[in-house]
Length: 433
Image (tube, rainbow, N blue to C red; front, top):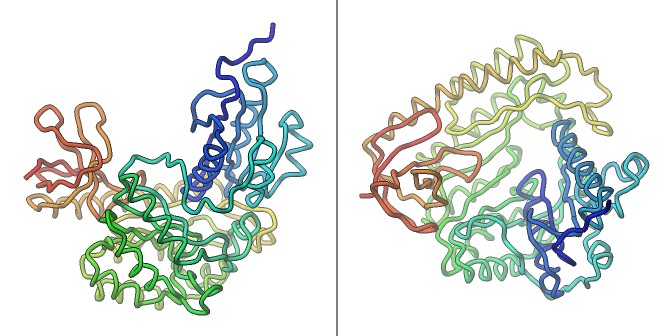
């Protein structure tokens, strides 16, 4: 017997993948709301739009499983329509149409007007910065550019997102003002590569100028930088970071590897010596900066010597924040022509070794924070703790500050001075001053 969802004519948007996908879902929902559509994020609705990720094997598997889950609900009569958009759909549309034909329609990453039309809505060009934010009210992602021009051998992003396209500065300022009016206090700047910002529009790297414009937005108190590329990094950004108190002393700069032979094969355009010097320049320019990086282990041809070099370099650099991924062999990338010759068990063992090392480094750095006071923003309450973050921590991926909720009452989204009295490898414990 077929049953129907109780939520009639409600569109449920499901988001998978990175913060850039979160942003895209928010824009989609903002357009739908402006068209007087009933829309929810990961709630209940009889029409489902799945915003997929197609970056690496695990992400693709999660996206496919999610599509299959909602197709089964459609076949059971629980929901009426299933639409798929995002990176997986952009990259594998013909295959998906063939393998999962019960999806009502597939859309790519730049198909928003067509997706809206299918959902009975018009694309409203005048909606600059109108989004239905899904993050806690105190922070929001600000996507300053789309696509990527970098030639990295392992990365499929240019296939799915196209060439680099910067957003005009005045649009980003308007969007930031609208977010601030909603109570957003922290902007997290995202792009595939922040450092390329402005090259297409203004014929120069313009990230520093954008930051100087954004710090003028009333109500915004923190601005955080995610996803910078090491080659050609615009050092004037560090000058602005040092001079402007609103710019968090934090930089997410994925470095991927350090062995010269691996970097060359990855087409990263740099060397171990240049990367090490760049990090020293960062530390000299902004001495208390927290640097977050991500690494890839198990890249084709990575030898035990390459890995040991990487491991000893991580030990030497003592990154405040670090994530490590195993290499994923992706079709249509330059590295796909290479033999994926590092066994999966070796890849995983190497990733585990790096993360064990980083856990120890993080523990040691956190011990140094005991007795210090940090300005923290309160994101949420979880169990018996309020959860906050320092300016050196990004949501979801970095350290958190835990404050005993049985002793203290704090408001979500407020800034509070917290004195640290204990520390674990990835958590700090403190009390309001």
